[in-house]
Length: 253
Image (cartoon, rainbow, N blue to C red; front, top):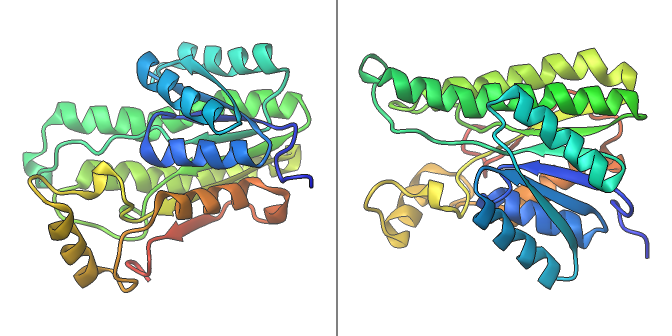
């Protein structure tokens, strides 16, 4: 039986992260060749081995998406090795040390914006250029339910960066759908990853906190976020353009 991504090449930035890695496995299970990009060669190699062991096809490229030349090399490397780039999931992101806005360290602000927003912009810049010249493609950007959809005191840099991703996504989507490049975003809430824990929390502490705050009563499984990404990237969502799909159990509903 044919699967949704047979013969497709998928690039995932931040490829060693929990949601990115789960999404990579999901793409591979559906027939894609997956290329994981990030700054840590060892972590990427481990993720590639996991996909290979599951029977998928995977590759990696070390790249820093905050550097335009490196982002351009990343896309060119995918095309050179695999002959095409059909889908990109821009998932590279950092949380940063939280603080009230007036107390926020300027270096933290810059670091969070550089990765979460400028990194998505630079990745898209070069992904779009390749896709426009080669018949189109689909891009999904990782935003968050913190930002355009909800706020949390002490996370000004993260919220601003992810709100920027949401608006950037919708702006670029309008600009390039006529060229066959379909762009959307996914905005997860708390998922079962290390980022869902506050300092010093146990799993029981986290789960109790989430039960009180999230209507669905739990964090998501990373696979639930991956399902949303794959749908947005697939032909099943062919008429979905510039959408920011919130996957947060009703937390910002």
